[in-house]
Every structure is written in structure tokens, then in C-alpha cells.
Image (tube, rainbow, N blue to C red; front, side, top):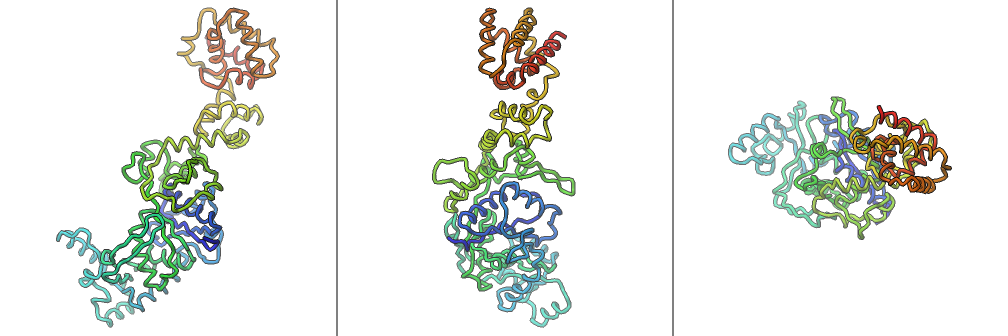
Length: 505
């Protein structure tokens, strides 16, 4: 391996980017960076009927949020641009014509209605998987069945046509795959795919091969769903005379539902309560889909989760920085089998990164969503008290609420259970004691409280749970003395006094 390594992530702008696509992009990125190579972003927008406005920008924002910056591509440029297939239209036509001239492709003039009629006839005849190939094409309108002068006349008249690949008969097609080994397919099982459409645009197959060759791509790392197309792509490399420059293939396993039965879909995410897209999607048609970013996930957690869905390190390490992943990654350690999405593991990763993030960073992330009137230092200390508990940022925001402002109501069920005839007297005595205490640390505060309770002959459980309730509104929260130390003497006494009024109301 050397710095000549060039890989590409080539999404179609037809909607939001599924996390399966994120995983594909990540493996390409890791492989390129591991070998000092180049990571190319190419937008494959040849199918203009499925183009969705905003999808391209969404894809780029998603990659950047995850932490993957491309070396060449839209907004960056590079020596092999343009990097949008719609801007490369003239490039493909010359190669389609080259294949026509050399006999490895041919013109076909069948209308959509004629093709559909043939499919229906074959279906009724017991052949539901009819293909346009060397056997069936003799019944269609193409350069094999029409006289040469009629073909030329149709071309001169501007009749609609497509260009199809002339698949050779009885040929063994070998696909050497880094993940799956050698895959062998008989050419008789490959149909004469359309390479160039009647609208003057190439199909994915021709554009993909021409672009990979033109951009000097050395490794094609893509999803398993493209494996059936690999023999066709090998044929195209051979037909164009580029067999010696053909990239190495690696087809990645599917990301499966948590139950393992089928490919993970948006419906599964909606059903189980997790996103399947990196960031929130808002389509122009009003369609929306939730994203990891907006649901309080850390990009590092998503990176770790995606990396381990199909790849395993050489040891039992589970948590990696991006740089550590780059150093550890190897395509040879990618599994053939589909990888089940593990929601609990995903949540574990996110909680890990939330816990490891400095309170100052979390304070900045939440600055526009929580009360910051007590100052940055107070907010950071409050975060430090509760950040080990939640899994997501919205949960952290909720856990901070009673630390940032006094409760306005008390949990009625807990109050009814804890409130006794002498509760008011005990709390007021404790308040009087607190007013005399020199608050230097939670430890000294706890010591002073213990001495007070012992002197009174009161058990801890007879007073302090009620104190927690009056301070926070419930029994939730971190260590009681850590909270009181955070509040300070004045705020603690104010909350207790206000709590007593609510309890007595």
C-alpha cells in the first residue's frame, strides 16, 4: 500500500443519508487515511428523476458532522473533477460511442411500452424474471435485428434509443473481493444492461466505471447490495480495455435490524426509538426524519458504533478515537456476515462520550438551552454532578433543571410518605444549624450534619430525605451534600424555606 491509494464515497442525492451509507463512507475514509491515500466524494446524480433538492448539501453536512472531510470533491475540487456526474455528461458519451464502434455495445430502439409488453408476455408464459440478453434480444428492436441502414436512419431521424452492453456468451467472470474472496459468475446470467439512456445521460453502471477509471480509484469499497453488479462492472472494464487498471473490490456486509432478520430501515428506527440518519432531514415535500445529532448523540459515539458494525479489531478494544481507528482498520478484518444493529451498545457508546466530555464543553453545548444566569462556573459544576447519569444531551438538560432553579412543586406521593407531625420542627432546626455552619466542602458539611443529628438523637432517614425533597422537588439527584455545596448556604436555606411553604400549603 502507498499514497497512491484512492477511494471514493459516491452517494446519490435522492434523500437523507442512511447510516449504512455513513458506515460505507467511514470505511473508505479509514482505509484511505490508514495508507496515506486520498478520500474522494463524488455525487452520483445521473438519475435526475430521483434527484431531491437539498440532499447533496445534507450528505456533505452529515460527513462533516461525523468528522470525515474529503480530499477531493464538491466544494474542494481536485485534479479529476468535476465531481458531480451531471457535470460530466460529455465524458460518458465518448466511451459509449467507443463501445459501439468496437462492438461491445449496441443501439436498442424498444419503447417502454414494448418492453413492458414483452415482460408481461414472458410472465404469462411462466418466466417472471425475463432479461434482455443474447437470447431474447432477437425478438426486440435493436442493432442485431434491424438492418444497418434502418439503424442509421433512426439515428439520423432522432428516434429515441438506448445503448446496451453486448454481454459475451459462455464467459466466466471473476470478481476478486477483499472481503468475500473470489466470486465467479457465468456471463449468461448477466443481461444486456442499458449503459446510456434516451435522455442523453449514462446509467449508474457506465458512469460509475468511467468515473472510477478517470479518477484513478484503486479500491471500490461499497455495500453488499452492489455485489450483483460487480460482474457487470468487470465486463465494462474489459470492454473498455481497462482491465489492468480495474480497482480492487470490497463489498461490505449489510447492517441488519436488531433482531437480525433483514436490513435496517427507517421503520425499524421509528419502531424502536432511534434514528437511522446522521442528522435531521427536512425535505421540501414536508418529509422529516430524525437524526443522531439532534437527538443528543455524540459524533464520536456514532463513529465507534459504525466502525464495529461489520469490522472487528485485532484485540478486544471497543472505544477508539478517529485516529486510533485509522491506525487499527483493515479491510481484511471486515466480516462477510450481516451486522445486527445493537441499540444498547449504541447507547453505551454515547453515555461513554458524554461522561468523558469536559463539563466546560458540555456547558457550551447547552448554553442556549438552559438557564445560565448563575454563571459559567456554576453551570460547569452542576454538570459535573450529574453527567455520569444520562445517556443523551437532552437527558442531561433535564437532570440539570433542579440544580439551576428551585423546584416549583413537590412530588406529592413522596411528600405524603415522608411528612410527619414533627417534620416542620426538624427541618427548621436543621436550617438554624446550617446557618451557623462554615461551608468549606461537602465533606465538612456532611460531618457537621452528622454531628447535629447525633446531638439531637435523630436518625438520618428521619430528616435528610425530606431535606432532599424540599431542595429538589423529588428524591432524584446526586449526592445531597454535593448539591448543597453547589447551591451555597444562602440558596440552600432559601430553597428549604420555600419548600416548607409548599409542604405546608
